[in-house]
Length: 79
Image (tube, rainbow, N blue to C red; front, side, top):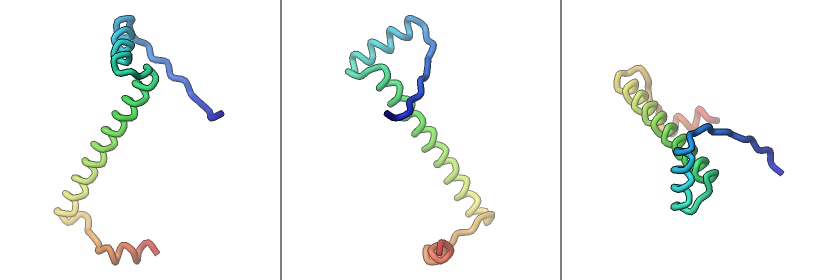
């Protein structure tokens, strides 16, 4: 058996009821819904971070702060 961790989420009775009803309508368990929702949000955050990093890199290349290299040069550096 794999190691598992437990997370407890405090919510109001109304929040719990809304969550439970939404999950029932979707045909998923609350566990499935919460895990999928959390991972979807984490992917969105990662995508946003990567986009910001790419824009920053392109800005630095345009300003001359960073330089680009050819694919051929990059392969040489990896060897």
